[in-house]
Image 1 (cartoon, rainbow, N blue to C red):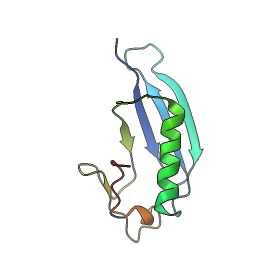
Image 2 (cartoon, helix red, strand yellow):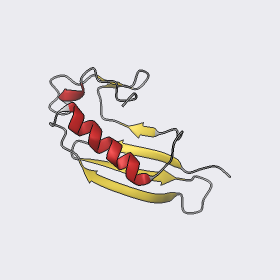
Image 3 (cartoon, helix red, strand yellow):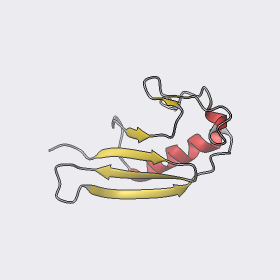
Image 4 (spheres, one colour):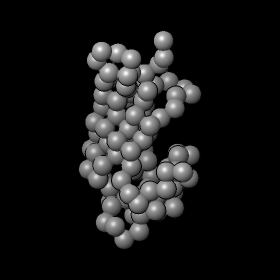
Length: 98
């Protein structure tokens, strides 16, 4: 039996998290949705993402699937936001490390 996969979907006005178990007939388990201000400072944005993750309770060592709006360098986990009107505070930030 595998543990449910924690996922986050980050949007310009919210972050939605869920525990997903593709082996289950009802694959979407616990969910959480928090408002997110994409024009806030980096610390506030990251704090909201971390709170969503904490509320899911995936536990230590979980491997997360995260969907982030572009431009985002998924291979490096770094935001490339500059002049796009949202998440500018995360430009160059190592979101994966946070």
